[in-house]
Length: 236
Image (cartoon, rainbow, N blue to C red; front, side, top):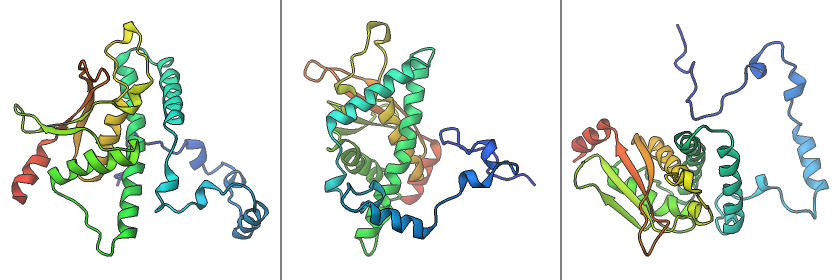
């Protein structure tokens, strides 16, 4: 009988065949003993604390410089741009990168919620979940809530999160031959991962919707799967 997990999720990294091969050297992947870790920790007293020693529930010291983030993200875009064949391929790769980030963001937020509450609640309804993404996820990743959450008047399965000044677009200069590029595909990947993790599968894309006041205005379009709407009807 074949395993149900024979094929890993395409957006997630998989272990190389060399690592799982029985002929691979085990010493290459050996971990240091607990005593060694303690000794190394004591020896490093007086130096900057290791990032793995930080308390995950403390958010004040977890903030990252906006300039540092913008510089890193611009380097990621330039690195990816040199390895793609077109705009669609570039946006797909940014979306995949954002998806991997979104998985970790959701895991961290759930950890903090369960650690700070005696009776943590997992939201299963659609609208409260979207509001949580609009507010809490945006604040956790970008330092502030998104500007608006809207429902499509034409399609019942579509919602839109609007960001008037997205951080990922703020310091990106898009050349004329890539005028249709939306680097917020990275943000769309984060949203899609969070929705998947909450059991609300959807296809999420990012679209530039500039205005005279907000030239970088971006709309993150969420198109829900049919099963989500059917479940919402049953929960009413």
